[in-house]
Image 1: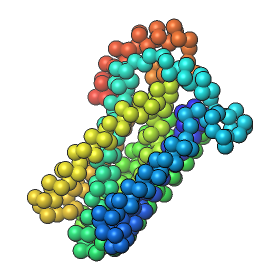
Image 2: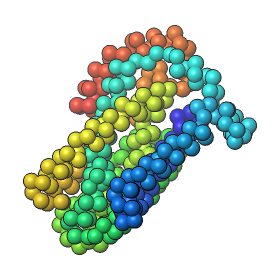
Image 3: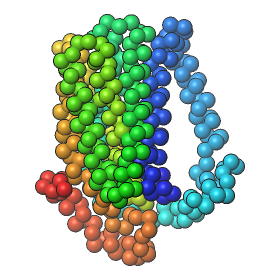
Image 4: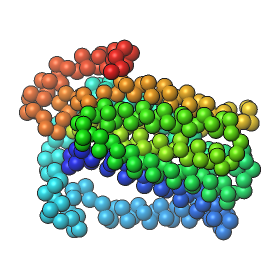
Length: 327
């Protein structure tokens, strides 16, 4: 994703995540049908078999080096970077502390996003089931409709982000601004949920809020913008924010609901964190590439010298910028 199509990073990332959201949309009705047909234990067994089959198919089809794949064409290979050159680059050391410091604001923003997305993934079916006394089938169908909006939002976000970058060459507009807009739109769509009690209207506003998944392509393109040569490590650092939210947020949601019996209150926490995330997004700096981490880089000795000179300075400045300089 980082090397062959620099101007289509967001779209490439959106395709992978849209596939995940499509899985989210198809799963509730599928599981509801399986529970009726083979009980909930049988649904686990059925989905486990499907998962194993997919793993086997992936192992047989996927190749680390595209040149080893029997179905790839010479024309496609010409558009891809040399695998041998990538392997050589992987042996070079990376300034972990400097990279971690640059990714702190991005991880914080992604934590705010992750808190909300896990509200949807973990609680939306139960929200429809308990708040509106729907049966299992109806709850699954409403949940699928909400998640389907995420599929559309995911795909559209990548297209829009790359189109903006292609026209302006401005990563702040193409990445940061879309993340901010997505968070704000999601907040605006969640607020009516706290006031409305009409099932259809609530489902529509939940879908609109989840349509704001179009932020995923832009935010996942940011690690590739900041550290193209180490985008895997940068993406992993960013994803720790969502992983932490995935651990904490379902526990908080469950505690709040147990204590209050109100299934809408968890949305208040998501609204607050999305607003915080929208403000923190101004410190992500997708337009400032990490020194020595670019694809078109200086020689190894020059790169090492640049990393050494800027290592501590970048770390300190990242925390200072996080506090004082959002532009």
